[in-house]
Amino acid sequence: MIGGALGASLRLLTGVLLPFGAWTTLGINGLGCLLLGFFLTYTAGGRLSEPLRTGISAGVLGGFTTFSTFSVETIAFLQKGLWLQAASYVAASLLGGVILAWCGMLAARKAGRTS
Image 1 (tube, helix red, strand yellow):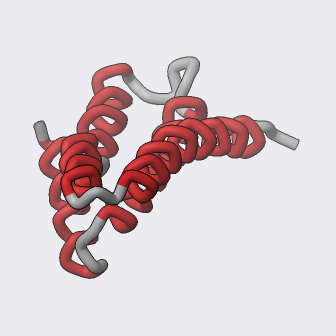
Image 2 (cartoon, rainbow, N blue to C red):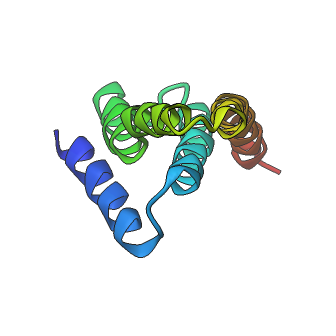
């Protein structure tokens, strides 16, 4: 619960500091994907207890990102007849999220190596 509250608070803070809109949500969700990919890979293998690892990944990062806002913003594009923007937003969110999570995983693997 604490992790979710922290993540939601961070999301609210970014909403205050950045302009409201679909592209801000895209950036927040992309950052969350990158951080989640990094975090889960870097902490794999017992670096953190599972309850703490879950609290940070599902709580903090899950509270920070927002699928519901993504969904509502996509519907808003569609209701305005902005089909290309809606399709671009969905594609950028899904493909971008997967690519950024993968980049986070690669960065964590590199960071986890000892020289």
